[in-house]
Length: 506
Image (cartoon, rainbow, N blue to C red; front, top):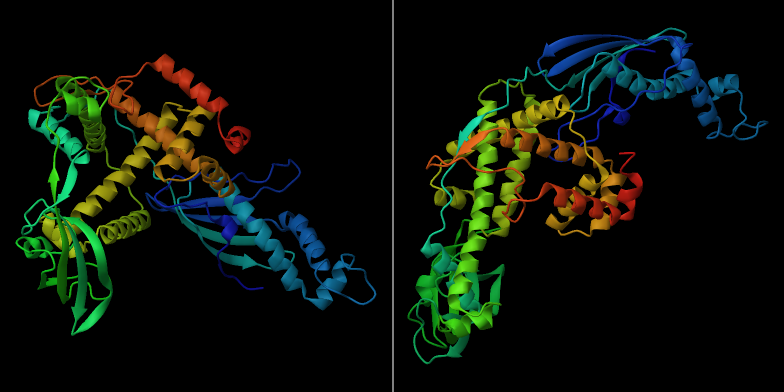
């Protein structure tokens, strides 16, 4: 039987979007009587290795026996019961080569994993397998090229220095939030005048191209606030000054559908004009819109909430700045295939978000005052930094021996489920069924490693004040470690059934 290329699904580490840390699966249990697999590793680059593996024929014998038993249950041979067909009869009926192939398909993944462990390699993707030698009653030889986790010389990461912008909540910020609250309690009344900026109107819209109505571009009875923008370019300008039952046609470009980016004619008709009346800013409004008795108390609460939000933004900026300070101290080799995959994933995600927002990439870049080349360069830089940061945080988590307990994993899964709008139990079941729990565990370990970096760093704002970033909670306040530990324990007790039963195994 000749050599050839092979790809085996069982050789491929489990993958999910933007999660690249991989741990090799367990090899079959060792046996002092078995002949060990021989392997050698050739470093093709800091992130790619080539394994050459030799498997003695003795190692194939258990798999050969299993292959004969499997095939015996699949074929019908006169004179023999199903499953009881002797090996020599199977060789005559289906051929010895079929049996050998079946045995190789079982042995090769195990030998590959054993070679990974023997050479202390962590694979990052599916290997490229090539069988270089295999003959009956002789050994099996194959090579496996695979992207591997690079070796990193960790620099000192204690006492990193970084700076962030000041935390500032202005009176204008507070007024903007209070005004938004006023609008929620505003009332609408019909007016007999032309449309003004800020009015609420009910309109009919239809877009045509060469006299034909564009599919999906016709709506009636649509409520719209004039001046909001973001719907159709030119709509606000067309509406201002129109009266009830008046029609107007203007030219614009569609931002979605088959005619995206093409000029179309849009006819708009106003069927109702309403003016919004806002409540007076006084204590009565505060009592109606909140639990506070006075307007001043309401404003102070708004300021406090804004401050907590700003603190979270400042903490996020601090984490980014500390991580960037660490990245500047070390050169991390990156697998180009991983970088390419992440680039493609982020582009697809952005395009999907833009589509939901009714924007094209060209329009987005125009609003961001960025060229296509600048966008691509910035995206690649951010992707490379993100992949390098993953490797660094993994190294730190290993060095610091950071672990994950059941309560932490449960809380993380519940949080992820809430963020994606899924039922927690369904999310947990999916994670276990598709073997994604190790990835979640690694996410938590990276978070712990990053928190360790930030807490050991000196981060100052623009005014020179040192930030307090230890035990920062999700609401922007500084937490109590003991209380949070008790909360985690309580969450563990109330964990979804699947998580409670399977976390220890994961």
